[in-house]
Image (tube, rainbow, N blue to C red; front, side):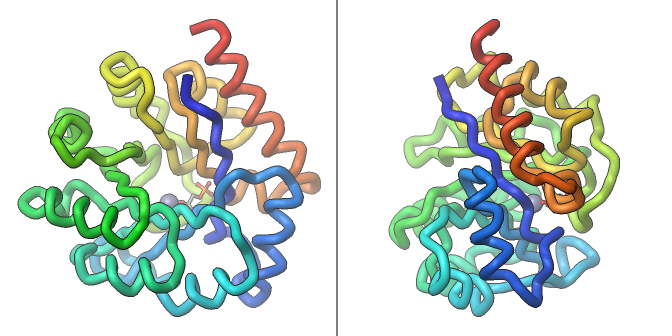
Length: 225
Ligand code: DX5
Ligand code: ZN
């Protein structure tokens, strides 16, 4: 049984008040804080890097689930490790040749390695990373094209989640993009247990309600599976 982890995406928070936004999410019941790291190369957007993680770390003990949308993840392992990142999830599309070294370095810096894949990338590409002798501990299935919050959930990505859950019953499977009250049941019943949600949480009058609703959906789906 894999525990539900609800991870509000801080990309939708008020960046000028990041520390209080983080505290608010934890008070609302968030398990993890999802941090989207973009540097205008892999995706056409620029967000945050290690200095912001370092600043935030001084204000919270929360698990900082970092999603690296960059072409050169290896260059970020040391700075993010020192900054206090908890999870380090890179994209398989940019790590086909060096993922093994990357995973080793992520672990040696005390972070949890994860791999993500874009909607157009076949799920088979992550299997070797889950099965290797130095495996990743999380697979993040993108349910929108990475780059921006507020996009529409792609239900056809649930085939990937189902395939992963069937093959790896105890793997952390994360979904990211367009998750909220109207889409959570699809992701939960497919087998996702880590749920990233930005606009649906931060845009809600009661974020705590949305977080607990998503947690319940994951728990209920696990009971029937
Ligand atoms: C998109 C990011 C997501 C984004 C999700 O590239 O990886 O984490 O913040 O936002 P919503 O939940 O609004 O789709
Ligand atoms: Zn993300």
